[in-house]
Amino acid sequence: MSKGLNNKIAIVTGAGKGIGRGIALRLAEEGVHIALVDLNENDLKQVQQEVEQIGVKASAFVADVSQLEQITQAIEHAEQSLGGFDVMINNAGIAQVQPISQVTPEEFHKINDINVGGVLWGIQAAAKKFIQRKQKGKIINAASIAAHDVFAMLGVYSATKFAVRALTQAAAKEYASNGITVNAYCPGGVGTDMWVEIDKRFSEVTGAPVGETYQKFVEGIALGRAQTPEDVAALVAFLASDDSDYITGQSIMTDGGIVYR
Image (tube, rainbow, N blue to C red; front, side, top):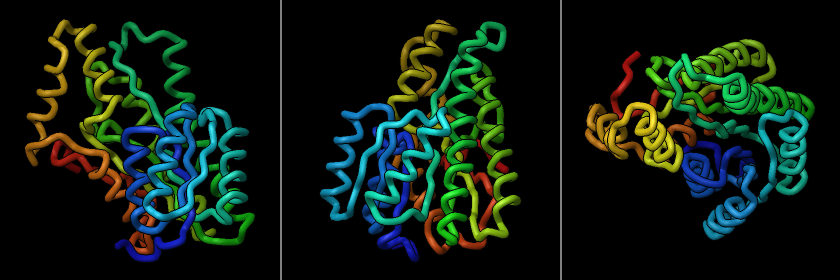
């Protein structure tokens, strides 16, 4: 068990599936009450049931993370329904496989609004609430190995994750005096629905058979296997716990050995 997590209250955005669901379940096992946020109400209800079966409280709130007002409302809902607010996990995000030459303005704005805007507004709203409550807090953002090393066909996606890394560092500096730590986790190839779509899109763009891109990526992992949401959730649980109190402004790789810094 991680230190100091029991009975804490955490918000997880993008909690309806994949890494977000994995984070919610891991934190629930640590005794954390979970406020689940996602666009898909059916997915939220399913994960809420899974969290509650573990024996902690859970709430569900449908919100678009690209909208500051909706993130603010989600935090208010978490505070009121669960009785507090201690950890903000800005997990929601999307991928985009596209050669630089073919990126459209619509695609550019969409991925930036979600991947960068969702983190920015989450940081802003969470820090405001922590300060209002006169308490310390933890903000944890979803970055990627693409925040450290750019990948072809993922140029704009990589740019959004570099931006998350920058926001993480800036927010850590700005909010340290308030007792708020800000860190990010950087997964590699996680076997989720997002990677299914990435692989499918690589097939469309490059002509590679479906499954080949993902297989090559996994073969390049030093530890010899694909990453799971549980692997990512283990790092997030540490960053949410008291054990990480002296860590801030870091974007930590959890990739099994792909990118080395």
